[in-house]
Amino acid sequence: MQAMKSDPTDLTLFLAQSVVDQPSLVRVAKRGPTVMVRVAPGEEGRLIGRQGRVIQAIRTLVRAASDPRERVNVDLDAPRKG
Image 1 (tube, rainbow, N blue to C red):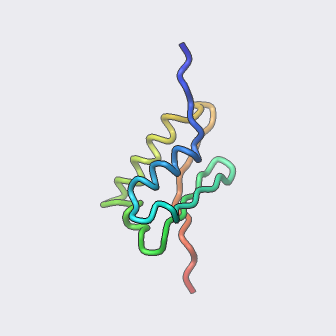
Image 2: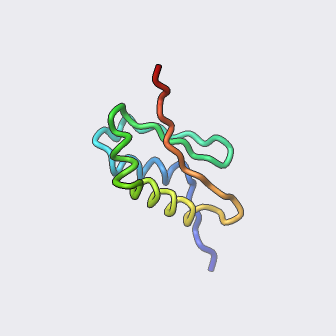
Image 3: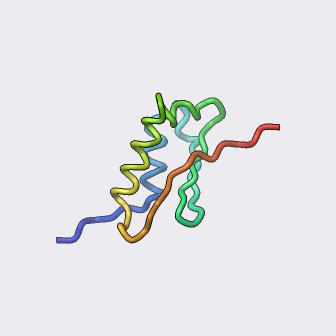
């Protein structure tokens, strides 16, 4: 029996929307092996979590659900200040 693999961008979008207050403002884009997540201003902390636990859990789940031949990274796409 073959395990079902999920699309890393769809899974990342679902997980990120689950932890923020404004899920409609979550944006996810795949850039090479990296899935970039953008959230509403001020909600970066919710996505990161205490000591990075939430973002690390999202990374773990996305890697576990993706194709083992593809090394997927999940990063926060924070707007540049200044």
